Length: 316
Image (cartoon, rainbow, N blue to C red; front, side, top):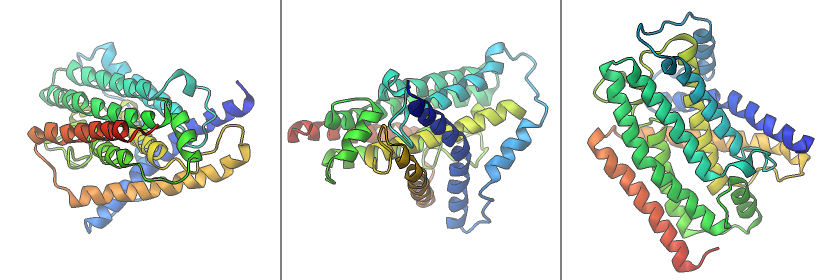
């Protein structure tokens, strides 16, 4: 492993840790503005994390060691996921060891831990949220895999770095399969990150919440790690979408000077993507939980159609 690769990997991790809360604050701010509400400050997520890390933790009386260690494991999974995705450079030493399939596995592992931790203390809200979270994951993960396979058929690789390098070097072209996969990925991203129309991150109504019910019993540093992990998940999903559908601006391997332009390009693309997510949430209505299978089933079907379009057109 060269020093440049190690530097690129470390820079990608630091960028994810620092920009993830900022992306959450950006989306929340634009969502409030579009709804004619008083918008929170852009740095509000940082203030919340600082406050939570300086509070004393209160644990449930019968909490097991799993409940105490789950926030650290979930945060580690999301941090490792951010190290796989090429955000600034394709020269990532960890990318050969894990591809898009392993990335989906990390999301699934984090989901299992947070669901088990929510059920561990035996509250009704935690169990309800865990069941809904597993339902969403059961439907969203196959759709996400189909989206990744749709891109891998074009590039002949499931590695995200290979996908970025291949698509960025090709001439600008419109792939019908990627258009279908892009719509499917947007639907999956909204569901996986507990956004409208699948979930509402601002509500604590027990009949509708999913993510909030999973972390309802946590406090202080444990809650801070879970909130930070949720921001990292949104960041990773956004970067996966940028890597597949907008791979331009990512520095190629052995091009250190390109890193100077990669960070502003990433910030610009995330800003546009966060604004569009806020627009989608504003114009959408929260759907009933019984409609979620139809929503994610449609995403899976569109991704599969994208695969079939690749086969029919002989793309690759």
